[in-house]
Length: 198
Ligand SMILES: [Zn+2]
Image 1: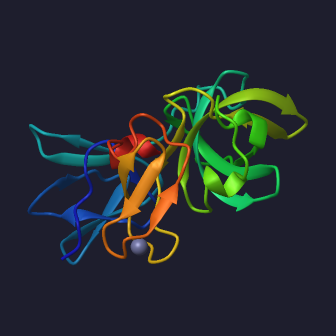
Image 2: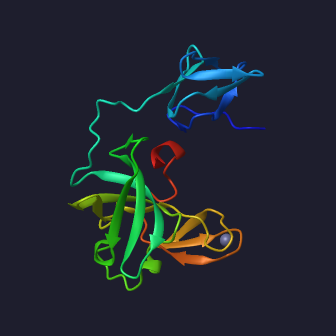
């Protein structure tokens, strides 16, 4: 059974949202096929609890499209280098910029107050992180995860792919295969809901 969309979740174009018995579909942002509701555009799922009406709301276009110093963003680690990591991000200050894909770098010296010897002790590819913009050079942004609210907010086991559970400060464990991994964690690691992650 497919899972129905929840309020404030992100929907992508064509995504399954639920069935007509469950929600009243909006004509402009959804379509119905065989009693199933799908999104006709990407945006935020908006469910009116009283009317059980579902629609997809666009990211507000009046919001600025540029990234500024001190913005907080959420992104995914794309690659690890010797002294930095690359991050793809589309969420800035809790707003989703669907049509823009920004790119940022975190230098090893901007990961934590503590000394980080190897990048791999703090991040792995596919980790979802929260970071702050500290500098811009042309189209690339320098980011920082220094501070307790910043760092990894979701990580999967590098061996088996299961979500990792926090077992200590900057320490995660896989309940499936037992692998123990180090990360620079945000204080709310594991408590970030699907909708806030993005
Ligand atoms: Zn595992």
